[in-house]
Image 1 (tube, rainbow, N blue to C red):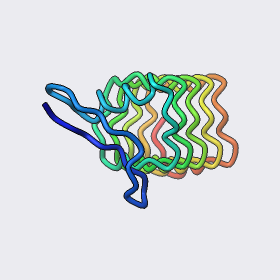
Image 2 (image 1 turned 180 degrees about the vertical axis):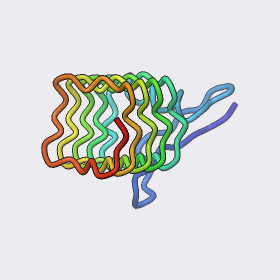
Image 3 (image 1 turned 135 degrees about the vertical axis):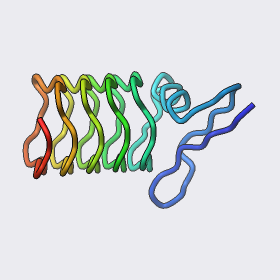
Image 4 (image 1 turned 90 degrees about the vertical axis):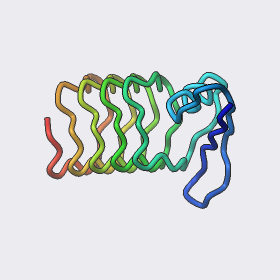
Length: 128
């Protein structure tokens, strides 16, 4: 059994999950299925490739350098999220709230951004 804790940027535990062969992806999907508020979560450099994060509240989350390739972030709240250098290739961001998100140097190649709110998002050097 492996225990993984999701913490905020101040190192406070937001959610804990234990299971065989646990990963950050499994733990995060479990938290979302339980409708945990993940505001301010620290997911720096997390491997979330193909994760189902639909409708997640990741307001002000640190996803710097995260692998979100092919992830489902449809309708997710990513307002003020730190997504610098993250890989969002083929990600579903349809209807996601990305206002004020920091997407500098993010890879958004083939990402579905239909109806996504990108107002005041920092897209400097982002790859489309």
